[in-house]
Image (tube, one colour):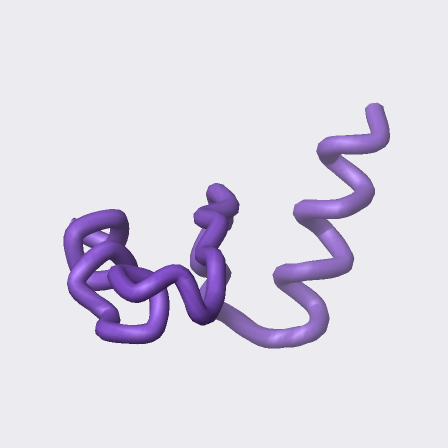
Length: 43
């Protein structure tokens, strides 16, 4: 769906601009939960 939105942009369609999509992960929580997740990922 994100690609369709990007490609329907008039500036991209006309070649005035280019678009690029990047994967991302949405994070929910607080700073303590984020710290614990980073520690767990590090091993």
